[in-house]
Amino acid sequence: MCIYFHKFNMFLALWHHFFIPLIYLTTCNLSVHKSSIYHIKIIHMKAHLKELGTLAIGLFSIMACSSITKETKPIAHDIHMENQTGDTKQLDTATFGNGCFWCTEAVFQDIKGVVKVTSGYSGGTVTNPSYKQICTGTTGHAEVLQIVYNPSIVSYSELLQMFWYSHDPTTLNRQGNDVGTQYRSVVFYHNETQRKEAEFYKKKLDEEKIFEKPIVTEIVSFTKFYPAEDYHQNYYKEHGSEPYCMYIIRPKLEKFKKVFGEKFKQ
Image 1 (tube, one colour):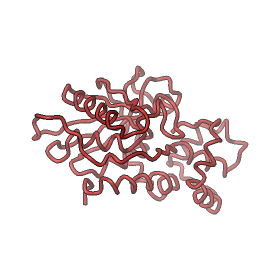
Image 2 (image 1 turned 90 degrees about the horizontal axis):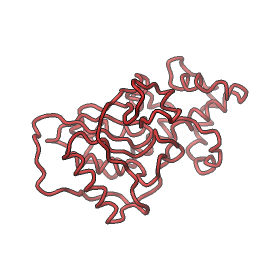
Image 3 (image 1 turned 45 degrees about the horizontal axis):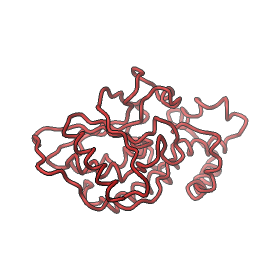
C-alpha cells in the first residue's frame, strides 16, 4: 500500500484498472470525507503531491495498494497430509501475509467456518507499529491477516489452499506494484501441525509445478500480532463503492469466487 513514485512504468500495464476510476475522480472532483483512508494517505504524502493537483492525488491514492497478481495455474485440488489429527471442537488461528490486506481480508472474511479476520502486522521488531512505520519497510513486519476459524468447518489445509491462490507466492518481497518486505509472502505457524502442513503443501506445489517459478513463501513461527488501525479493518465492506474497491478488490474477489465459490457463506 505504500507508494513508490518511480513505478510509473507500471501505469500502462495497469491502465485498464485506472481508466474508469480516473473518469470517476474527474467528474466527482475527488470529494473526500475527512475520515476516509484517502484523506489519511494524502496527509502522509502531501509534501510530495501538493503541486500535482487533485487528479494526481486521486491517481496515487488508487495506486497505493494496487497488487496485480499474475495469472497462475488454478490450485484446483486439495493436498492433504495423511493421518491428520486435532481437536475440531475449538476455534483455531491462522496468520498469513499475502500482500495488501485490504484485498486479502475481503477474500477470507466470508469463507464458511471463518469466524473473524483482523488485518494487522507481524514478524518484525517494532512494538505496536503504526501504518506509517510499516510503509517505511524498516520494521521487519509484514501486512498480515489473523484468521480465527472453526476447523470442523474449514481445515487449515483448505485455508492454505486459498492463501496460495490469493496471491503470487513466487515474487520476493512484492505483490504486483506493492514492493517491500512488508508485502512478503509468509505463513506464521502457531503450532507444529501448522508448520508441517504448510511445508508439506509448499513442497507439493513446487513438485507439481503449479506455479511457473519456485515458491518463495516464508514459513516461520508466530510470535506477536499487532492489529492495524481501525480504518484498515473491514475495508472492502465499509468502502465497497470507492474506486479502489470497485476496480481493484472486486475483480480479484470475483476471480477467487470462481474457484472457491462453494466455500463462501450464503
